[in-house]
Each structure stands twice: as C-alpha cells, then as structure tokens.
Image (cartoon, rainbow, N blue to C red; front, top):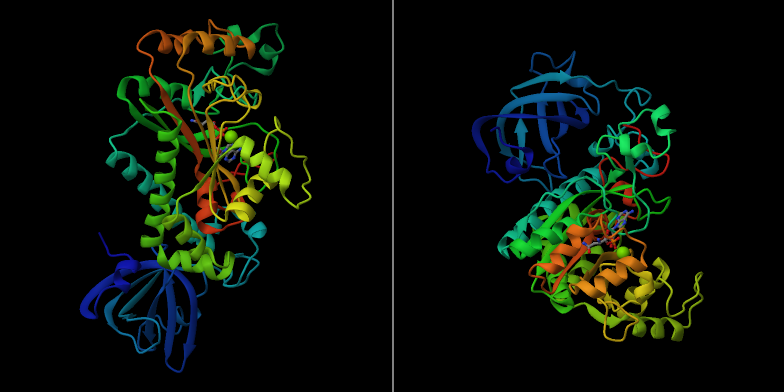
Length: 460
Ligand code: 4AD
Ligand code: MG
C-alpha cells in the first residue's frame, strides 16, 4: 500500500520517490515556486508540496491548481524549513487526476469557514471540510475501540435484525416495512397478505433479541442502525441512529452501571490518546475547554443518584425550568443537563425511575413503584445511555406485559426465556451519535453522522 499523508508526516527525510495522492487544499506561488497543501483525509494536517518552475506542466497546469483538484505527486521527502512541519515533498512530477473549477459557483467548498447548516446542504462534499473530516476519524476510532473493549471482556457481537415484528420500547415509533402496493394497503387487515404475513417494521432496539443471546452466551452486544419515527426536530434526535446495546446474564443493575461507566471512560481515554490533533481542533474552534472536560470523565467516577434524589435536587434548585419537576414525570433534557452540569459537574447515573414511565421489560423494585432502571446523563447533551436490569420473573413480567396491552402470544418467545433457565440479566443502550457529540463538542447531532435522517430530510 502507498503511504498516507499521516504516515509521511512522521517519516524522516529520505531520497525515496513517494507517490502521494490527494486533493489540493491551497496553492500559492511565489517567484519560481508553487506551494501546494495536499490532503488525503488521513489526518487534519496536509503535507506541503513544493513544485519548481522547471516541471514540464508548471506554467499550464501546476500554477493554476485550485482548491479541490485531485492530484498525484511523485517525489522525495525533504526537511522542511517552514515552522510546524518536519518534512515536505519536493515534487518531481505532478499529474492532475481530477480538476476542480476555481470559481466558488462551481466548487462550493472553498477554503474558508462555512456554516454547518450550509455544509449539510452539500452532504456529498462536506467530509472534506476540516471539522467534518475530524468527526469522521473520531467516529471511526470510537467504533473500533468499542469492539476492542467488548472483545477484551469476553463479549460476543450478535447481529440482531433490522426488520422486526416486535416494538421493544412500546412507544409506537416504528417505521412500517411493507411490500404491499398503495391499493393493497387500503384493504382490511392488509398485513396478513404482506411479505411476512404480519405487520413488520424497522427495529427501534435490538435489545429483545440480544437478551436471547445473553441467555446462551452470557455476555453479548449488538451495534447497528436503529430507527425511530419520532417527530423530534432537536439537536440530539435522529430518525436513523446507531445504538450500542450490550446485554449481560448474571448481572444486576450495579454491574450494568459499572460496565457502562467503564466503557464510556475507556472510549474517551482512547480518543484522548489517539486523536490528539483532531480533538485540538474541536477544543480550539468548536467547544472551548473540551479536552479538560474529557479529562474529568477519564479520571473521575460518575455521580450516582436515584430518580427520587434527582427530583429532590431539582425541586430544591434555584432555577426556573420550562417543564415542571414532579415525582412521576419524565426528566426533560433541561433537567438532565442541570443535574450533571450544575449539580454534579460530571456525568451522572440516575437509577430507579417510576415504573409508569419506563418500558415493560424493566425489573420491578420491592417498593412496587419503581424499576431497576438507569440513565447516564452527560454535560452538554443529557441522556447518553438508557438501560436496566430486566424482569426475569415470569409472573411479574406477564402481569407487566398484560398491563401494557401486549399480545402474550406474539411475545411467547420472550416469556419462554423466563421459563427455561431464567437468570438475573441487564443491559443498556448507548446512542453512538450522542457519544460522538459528547467527545467532539459538536452541538448538532446531524453533524456527527455522515447522512442524517430527520423529519422531512433524507436527500441521498
Ligand atoms: O433509552 P433508549 O430508548 O433505550 C432503549 O432503546 C433500550 N432498549 C436500550 C437497552 O437497554 N438495550 O435508547 C438508548 C439510547 C438513548 O439513551 C440515546 O442515547 C439514544 O439511544 N437514542 C437516540 N439517539 C439519537 N436519536 C434518537 N432518536 C434516539 N433515541 C434514543
Ligand atoms: Mg431512554
């Protein structure tokens, strides 16, 4: 494989003729030389290429290189006299692979700061912008690190289905998947005639299927696209997002929290160690103080409190909230952020929520009013993780499902898991884009996923 610019920037000067392919970020000429900054996406910095007037296509091509042009450069690495770079390339040959017109009307991504809104309107070009390029690398690093974390702890990855007939969260936010025509859909009970013989949709969570494998392999996780047809136009909701869902047998709520906390701190530590240059960009231009904030997460344990304690804290706070705080109501983003930003100054794990606001599968506590749930809230975002110990007792689960109006026949497989070798087990879901937001300090979730899907928006 040809070396990438990231590797070359760490290589000592040498006479070897390297082939470097990339896109021109800037080109300026001075006297009989052209200074070209070339990027290939491998890191934030580009490499400087020096072209001399003696090169055969200098006057017609090289001198007029414009931002975005794709080129192939051949030449040795020489010591750079310029500040902040060890090496540069002394071009022996520059070949234009794909030209890009110089005027901004033709090539919209000029070398200047564009707004994130504008960049969203050119999703085919935006990964070439510095911040979006850095998000791409950090997202990839987090993705790799999470698989390594679980493999090191004896977990297996399970690929749960995207098309499913069970609505795990019971919130009615499933997209329907159908092969019926518009006309066939008008008939009564149309889905009995549909592809699967019943109504199917895109998964809102792989948890129920992950539970099946947790009860055979003890430690598993699923990680994949998750779909929710919720009409929330906020900076932290997508209709298609990636969710990481570990599920552990022989594990109670305390163990669930310990694993989630260890995971988040491990992932942040990996990014702090491996993505220094990209983090520095976010620290300087997007979210001041980001690196210190991440260091706090790496070094300090999370604060833990029950839902009831959280409500008491919020009620006692000298703060006007838009949504009222009452025991029994769901915490809103403003409450979640207040708890971790103002009260704890670090991530907070809230446990034991009222059972009326949580799904059927969560384990009931002895008080009869709350369930063994836990949400992890982080500064700047609010909820990053939602999880719980699962109800492993057949009679209590059956009653809960009946209360939620679920068809017990349809979920007989889920109940069977409580009939044959049921054990205490727990799991959680971590919103991967919210994690990328937290790590980069990017304020809108649409800018941390390559192709955001939100209400009214799925351009390509
Ligand atoms: O809290 P949620 O709904 O939990 C579940 O789905 C459980 N079945 C998970 C489990 O226990 N295995 O979602 C989990 C996380 C949230 O905390 C949030 O970070 C993220 O998924 N999330 C979203 N992220 C982006 N856009 C949305 N519309 C999201 N909805 C949830
Ligand atoms: Mg939740």
